[in-house]
Image (cartoon, rainbow, N blue to C red; front, side, top):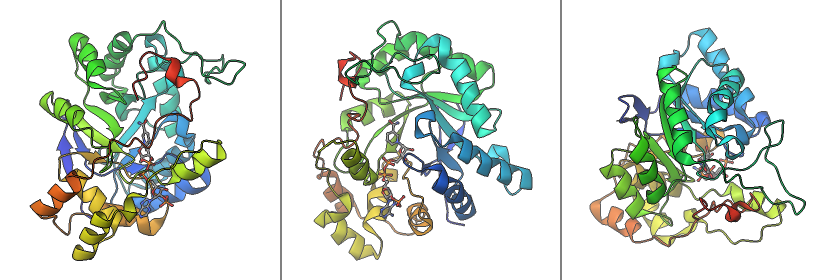
Length: 323
Ligand SMILES: NC(=O)c1ccc[n+]([C@@H]2O[C@H](COP(=O)([O-])OP(=O)(O)OC[C@H]3O[C@@H](n4cnc5c(N)ncnc54)[C@H](OP(=O)(O)O)[C@@H]3O)[C@@H](O)[C@H]2O)c1
């Protein structure tokens, strides 16, 4: 089993520093991927209702838990409050729906997926207007949603609570009302989008950063193309400095990109449904980057956001959208 390490959250709970991302992991692939991941030593799984795979993940988890091969307390399961339900009155019922799909009694951390709130149809799906644009819900407020999130901890439905895609100002507003501070802020973070000010702010406040798209979200290229979004995305595996450092250690560019992040005390959730790549992404502790290599990778920042949420048409009309 590959080694995994932990960070202690401000809630006192331990979070495995490497988790498995599952966005763009369809049912047909994700159940088998969870099996391979748990076998390889992953214990942290990141999902969300909008990834449409909670049921398949739940099936795999139930098999593992029923077989006794893993205990619930060894797992760290993350899911998120969707944009269409990002309001106080929807928090508990939305988490309960995720828990039913995941076949779990609690999640290890529940995150507000984004500071943006959209109006929802009766079935809970996002409401779009006649032009196909998301309809912003301006009545919701992230601080009242946060207060509802805190109640999940006392009711035992979530061990910890946190946020995702929040900037410093949004975090400051939440911290002002919080009885329980967010345990993590899950943000895009990789060599081309380092967000150092936000990372330093979160560290100073005891909020662990979880880096999403740590490999640059290559799969997004295809998704964007099928949605008609013509945006050139960088290939982080092809950066000469990354390739050179990888060759020097006999590791892959992906492993170098991931090791650089965890060395900075940041949690990573690379997505893969490929057995070899998924194992590779967990196997990043058997080499060490030199201070010079770390410094070289740190100079690569381009402030380039890969996940700009443009797939969610109309999101830019919401005042909490800051990308
Ligand atoms: N909170 C948010 O708003 C938010 C936004 C985006 C993502 N996330 C979370 O963060 C997770 C990770 O981000 P992401 O999925 O955007 O992108 P990512 O993890 O940076 O990259 C995933 C892509 O890289 C490929 N890949 C994985 N390991 C590889 C390796 N070792 N070598 C070569 N290619 C490799 C994967 O393909 P294969 O599967 O074919 O290996 C997939 O196409 C998501 O899955 C999701 O759980 C959260």
